[in-house]
Image 1 (cartoon, rainbow, N blue to C red):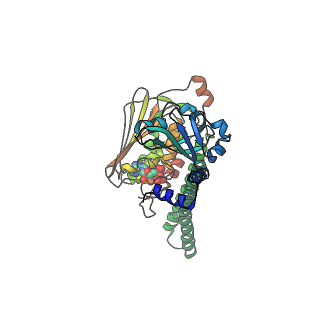
Image 2 (cartoon, helix red, strand yellow):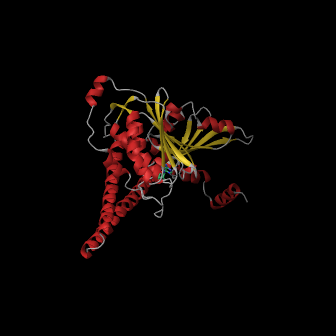
Image 3 (spheres, rainbow, N blue to C red):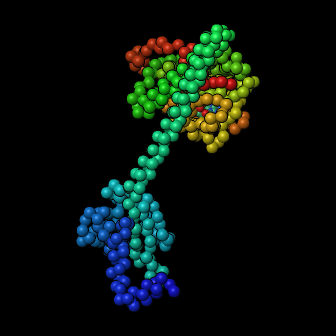
Length: 399
Ligand code: ADP
């Protein structure tokens, strides 16, 4: 027996008023239920609708549905009712109402026996709180993930420093092999730098994100800046048996940039190129003038990055291999910082990579200079030696 007949039979036998019962059910739903004619005039609304719109039914009645149920700026485009009328199908979508709440709206075309559409039933569920809860859960998940990442990143170098100090102490007590002293001291130094880098990157990334960190732009020769970074790390990389190559289409190009942070960007790309290559691999750097932009490419013949990971590596803590058994250490925040710094230069960073055969990071910076007076005003002395920066940036390279 069909539901319709079943209800009719039972209700009639028991003397229940069908209409009253159904109206009661509709009034007590958490959804707004509205019946409207094809002229879009509201003919009936349940109690939830009256409560949500905060107006008595007499005020709602015969009003145009758009005035109440969604923002009138969305009147013509993306109309659910039009779609339901045109297709004769149920249409569903999320919409923001003029009252600022988010609703899941479902529109049912009401048809007569000849299958002609005679009206529309609109059922809307207020999902504002549900959405807010979902966002809060997502924020909590991210926070938990951040703490898990941070505790790992803080604990690893601290443990290494601790064991370095213990071994040093043991050696000193026994007055043993003096060469070992330097080795343990180096472990301690490298891990101090790792911690410093992590803390500095975290502080700066938050400042850049919150826009409370102003870059210090000056007119500087980007070719010599990049060249300086390249030649400062060349020996280090060659000692690690990487083959290095530098080429530039241009000899000099003065553009507005924050040299301190640009050095940091280049060092980060270099340290990654070393970390994710093997002995005998090649790392090349290439500068070219594209008219409106200067392009700087750092290319390697290393392990490459799978396509599905090429976006997440620019996110905070985004890494291809997150396992603790991976060959290289690193926090996964370097590239997100690089991205923010390049964005602040109105530049772009692109990645071309093939998993298994290498990666190329290409930075494009606008070839623009600061007006002379701005350049004078913003000129600052950078005291921080590049050697200290290299020690810090390369502190998590082991291979
Ligand atoms: P970290 O190097 O500290 O992990 P980054 O943000 O600098 O953090 O890089 C994020 C991830 O991107 C790395 O963990 C690695 O998986 C991937 N990656 C970056 N550069 C390269 C590269 N040149 N070759 C292969 N993978 C890379």
